[in-house]
Image 1 (cartoon, helix red, strand yellow):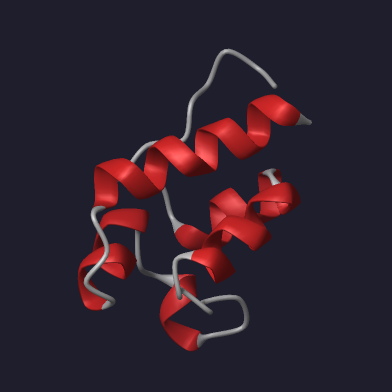
Image 2 (cartoon, one colour):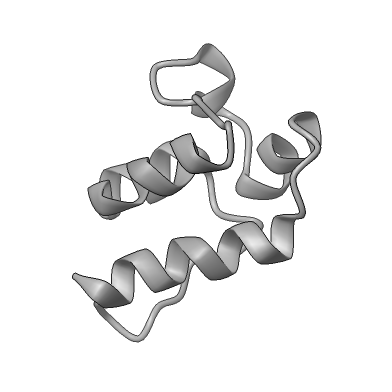
Amino acid sequence: MSDEKITKKMGINEVVGKYPETVEVFAKFGLHCIGCIAARFECIEDGAAAHGVDADKFVDELNKAVLKK
């Protein structure tokens, strides 16, 4: 992984496109955003809020998934 970390303000499609290994984390948290129209314009924070997920915890898990690769 580069020095860039995933943040709450990053777009869902941007994250999945750059880091396909995060798809499992999205599913684990109940964000089945992949292929959803909203994923084209929503950021991680918006998607988490829409699904009642703690955005900070979610972003931490996304970054851990990327670091494991």
